[in-house]
Image 1 (cartoon, helix red, strand yellow):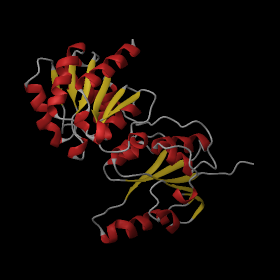
Image 2 (cartoon, one colour; image 1 turned 180 degrees about the horizontal axis):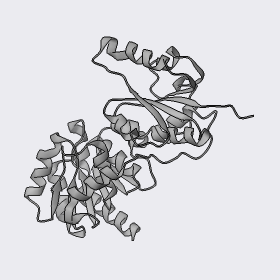
Image 3 (cartoon, one colour; image 1 turned 60 degrees about the vertical axis):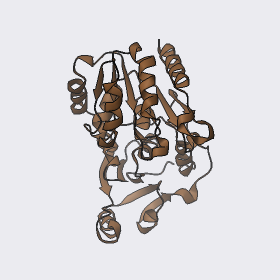
Image 4 (cartoon, one colour; image 1 turned 180 degrees about the vertical axis):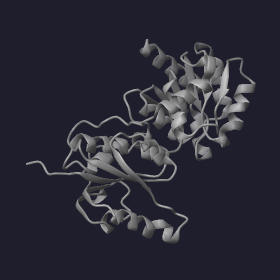
Length: 304
């Protein structure tokens, strides 16, 4: 007889890309327990990706600026709930401070693969043995309208997305390389769309000011979900190892990620349309522009 699970607590991760890579576990839990409501513990910013998840309950945040990094306040909120099952992908001890029928944490994990998605699913492998679901991010008509207005006359056309930033200098392919890529491949598209935060504006403006291809710079001008809606409008996305690549793969468009330092086998975007290149000696600028342009062309041909 299948156990009755009405309410689940799902503890996700903090960074945008990491949080996206937890969504296959979230979907697996929904597949196992379709009637259950799933509350989520996440980061204040990255948990935006769960806003429109149709089967979620409450979203809880650890307020790190509060007493003891917000743990006592969070525990008080969660103790007021009653969970049949807790799935903790973070495993900072929170799952063991709360009452629950069953708990699954990294201590239960069975190795099911190298990639983070596979490792996360290994935590619930005792109850889920299906194929790994794809990553997913949910949006609404509000974000779609934003994309239509932001892209204007280019909405619905053949668009290339670029993400020129990352959270570390060693992860950033040079602006000169991106400019060369636009010069080589940009004419195959109706426009190039730049995405990222406000720190990425300078690189993007450098490229735009030297390019004859129509460009739109949206760096620093979108929320996470607004960026997702823009990504849904693209033909393909090329970028550094950052959250944008994971968001792009989650909405099902082809992605090409350039890696320097890091572990692409573990942290690359998850999905059948995700491809990547790694710089020799873990130097991202050892990746040749021609190699990126060639792989980009192959991906576009495969779409036809």
